[in-house]
Length: 227
Image 1 (cartoon, helix red, strand yellow):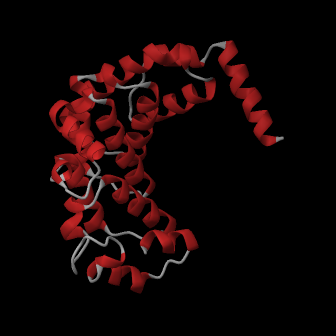
Image 2: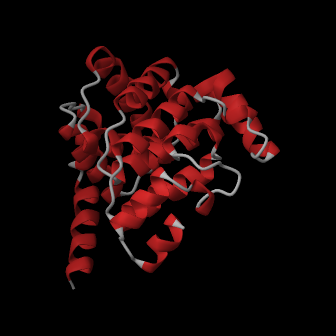
């Protein structure tokens, strides 16, 4: 029902409140008469992502629900044991819980949720800290798309990583430098902007950004967009 309302562009807050607090059978048939927040651990991750995207479309915020989802994803609570989940989904979460960031599917799922929370302007503090800790342990596991998404999310949410800040930024920047030859000029500009927001200035990306060829590509792209 929530996703249907989002597809129609109907932000009916009284109805959304009813769906959230009283009758979740309208949203997930296998859940009882109770709050989604209380049973979030029983909802497959793909449906949780759909709910977050729907809330974005509806410009509707439910901090309690967002917090419950972020805690559930961070802890992996009950995801791998839900009988309503597809076997492939259970395997993905089981692998993520065992090997964490080293598993691309588990890493991708967490980044997907972080991106969804960013779109909602919601800062899942504990989840950001936990993922940053995993990144510091194995930064080379990040792909180029992962790096771009992670930097965008962390810079946008402006979360203070405290003790993890320096090793996290060093690790991500190290991986970023290895991908510089593969990056388009506009991607490099966005990345340097994100790093600047995070207060981290690395000479290698800056030197690459200031190269004549890179500046000409950015200028050409800007002229094309303004034409």
